[in-house]
Length: 560
Ligand SMILES: *[C@@H]1O[C@H](CO)[C@@H](O)[C@H](O)[C@H]1NC(C)=O
Ligand SMILES: *[C@@H]1O[C@H](CO)[C@@H](O)[C@H](O)[C@H]1NC(C)=O
Ligand SMILES: *[C@@H]1O[C@H](CO)[C@@H](O)[C@H](O)[C@H]1NC(C)=O
Ligand SMILES: *[C@@H]1O[C@H](CO)[C@@H](O)[C@H](O)[C@H]1NC(C)=O
Ligand SMILES: *[C@@H]1O[C@H](CO)[C@@H](O)[C@H](O)[C@H]1NC(C)=O
Ligand SMILES: *[C@@H]1O[C@H](CO)[C@@H](O)[C@H](O)[C@H]1NC(C)=O
Ligand SMILES: *[C@@H]1O[C@H](CO)[C@@H](O)[C@H](O)[C@H]1NC(C)=O
Ligand SMILES: *[C@@H]1O[C@H](CO)[C@@H](O)[C@H](O)[C@H]1NC(C)=O
Ligand SMILES: *[C@@H]1O[C@H](CO)[C@@H](O)[C@H](O)[C@H]1NC(C)=O
Ligand SMILES: *[C@@H]1O[C@H](CO)[C@@H](O)[C@H](O)[C@H]1NC(C)=O
Ligand SMILES: [Cu+2]
Image 1: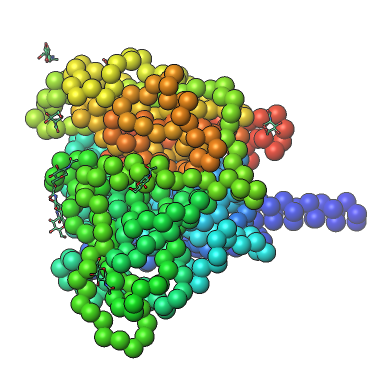
Image 2: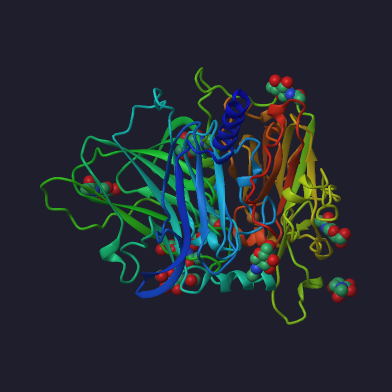
């Protein structure tokens, strides 16, 4: 009797833990539905028919379960961007990195483990370019009984910056993936799914934020855009930046923010102007030549409640010009961690793993002439253009399937040169096509310097790391100087980010402690660059103690 009771108890405990019966459950049905924007209707892939998709609301430290049903026609995976998922890479999502795709008709139960994150993150598809329409916000409230490190805002609202294509996104993806092409640029930028007044037939649906004078609004801003960074601003209002990437910041006031793809930024908007209608707007920052991005402005409206006759909406928010690099550098350099008693910083001081990664634009065609005369592009990290395997790296690592990936990702470039020189020899433009990862011992203290190169005129790169936050300790233009630049590091209150904008022909230094065992993707969040190969993987080994080891895989991992 006793044994069977304890067996039953054991089984129930196992069942509860494994299936997380007590955790909040969400149902995400991936399916196509028609949407109309810019005067035309087309089917787009969504979660639960919503665009942008549903917002997840959790408290710090929660674990939730999302049942993902693929009722669309494409393979898909979902990623919880910025959620650290301690010891649980199984639910992280990047296709062929931590899982094989969920095929049409199939289902996958993902367990999302929140730990230190607090603020705003987001979720998105991590397969082909499906994230263009398959994405939504993740709101992480403080633990019950605790509060924000700033006066509690009266109202909170996600602001998702998005994009609209007239063409089918999968067609554009194929051009970029198969032929190394640029793909078509989008037709419009969006605020919460709407292009705004400045685009044709969009005016009636423009997103409106109704405010009461005297109240404070927490805007949880997400850049879900595929290929561009944005400036965002609210006319006649100063906003206060208070957080980014699920971490709080020392508050600072600005008339605009700069946000790269993958990033989130939390700002407080005080409704302290005379009751009226005011535009909020977003437009591109791009180092690309005209035509390689859309130069239009998306808008929404802040509408004060009350009895008044609004003046015509003629004042546009102040947005820096599309090539204002200075504004982007200034903004990034203004991000500082709180670094107070309740939010201490824990920057690794003794580094045992120094990595120096060059980020380059490349081409596979010698002397830039491809067989069909087309212009083809690749991209690389340390001259390796990453090739996706056809069995996911996590499974291959865990189940010891050999030959799927190599473990020789170099710590340094094979060639040191003046990375940021105006002209660089063509013979350096052809990268190696390989699937290489960097193995890291548990608890390694890592400093990673990203160095942009000017090969093919270079680009800026929003670099994103899965499974970790990193401290951004340094940032500068030109070539990184290993003797001088570290002296200028901010080791006191550097921001803790999961995505950071490495400037064109500049560098960025980040630090983290490899205390989350698993297989973690690192890539440029411009999807063109990622598809062209600007990505790699950190495999962080298990530590000694049981709490330092990866969790076992769930039973329903999608098969390859
Ligand atoms: C930018 O958007 C506008 C408005 O939708 C559109 O007319 C234009 O063609 C787009 N530009 C490019 C380069 O795609
Ligand atoms: C907004 O600011 C502009 C100047 O930047 C000013 O001309 C305008 O009157 C202001 N609008 C309102 C409603 O206060
Ligand atoms: C983009 O638009 C802005 C403002 O409308 C204009 O000043 C700028 O010249 C345009 N840039 C390009 C490259 O078209
Ligand atoms: C930015 O672009 C404008 C044209 O839109 C040009 O006149 C200006 O010189 C550019 N500024 C920089 C710093 O490149
Ligand atoms: C950013 O620009 C502001 C206003 O011009 C200036 O006061 C501030 O010192 C700059 N911050 C940084 C980090 O460069
Ligand atoms: C590329 O161009 C260089 C110099 O113009 C020439 O020496 C070389 O032979 C060319 N290589 C190929 C593969 O065409
Ligand atoms: C990249 O590797 C290729 C092949 O080994 C080589 O030809 C090229 O010069 C390398 N480029 C750089 C920048 O190291
Ligand atoms: C690359 O930069 C050089 C020097 O600034 C310029 O002459 C050239 O036109 C640029 N090439 C492209 C493709 O933008
Ligand atoms: C990893 O670091 C933590 C915190 O510094 C420490 O408590 C733990 O013992 C370390 N584990 C190993 C295996 O080094
Ligand atoms: C979908 O995923 C399966 C499993 O990895 C793979 O065999 C198949 O080729 C994929 N289909 C497409 C169209 O990519
Ligand atoms: Cu990039």
